[in-house]
Length: 433
Image 1: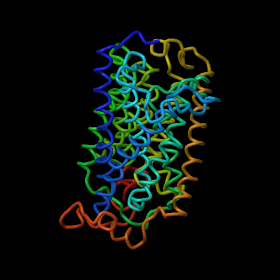
Image 2: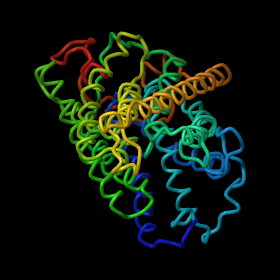
Image 3: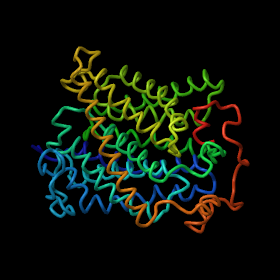
């Protein structure tokens, strides 16, 4: 029951909502720097267009589907908040205005949809993406959000823990990214042509802004300004730091040189992994989560070359794998000091919580992959999801948007054959060579 409006909590959530919204433009820069120069505007647009598309879908149906009372079986909410017509400025969610809580959750949905775009960079029709995003937000994101965070959601009732979105955001987007990459197929020249990031300063700037916004993402999920929010804030900082160190250590040992690309992606890997666990582990646990994610994800980005799927910007290798790392480690590292009761295996809690986390991972991954694959196929068979070979080869910025990012049309070095240079197979450079 609400005990009235908490001005401090409301102020903190207002700031956090703005921070999370900033993460989508930050992701646009992060992804935009990773693609080739002839596709950077398209990548920026794919991220920015997610903001209005998801906003409309969320306000009309998504919030009600995710956060209304359960409609049955813990699978989806009812439509009590259809178009949010019943919510006024005085309606509270706990100690904060419900309109603010709905907006905070909206920014999560926007970012999650935008994350998927990295898997299909350089080859997707913009019109098809505009069709895909709002439908995906309602068919995939909203049900999973209800399972994990909604009233009587089945995974919440089952006991799976996800503080700020390891299941809802990271694994859902990563599994969906894999499905969509399979629907569209690999880019022309995948495994043979050089596909280097065209602007590493963009990548680093985007990573830095993502890190900044992530404090609102995680600590804002406390929905109040208290000691828990402070602990989550510190855990977020620690995991990002250790993710960077872990990734750079792998590059130094394996490739002989640490890279700026590795530093940026290591930070993101650590932040991805701490997202589900930031409210369950102590500071030492956050160190382990971040370091593990940095090391594991640095190898995971190379798996696509062996498996043959072209996840252009490694949404699978970083977000899907990192989300699994952070979600599963809750079962080992959760401590009652943070959770208020639940303990992981290493703190005497046994295997029960680990089992619950694994069930959550499998259920969310399977659902997101299956629904996204079907949705992608339907769009591909009707309007077509992939640009023509001519447009892909020439560069999709001019073909789709009648613009180029640079006056010269092409910016940077001439292409090299895949695998040339000092970066070893499976390194950060390989994934975009």
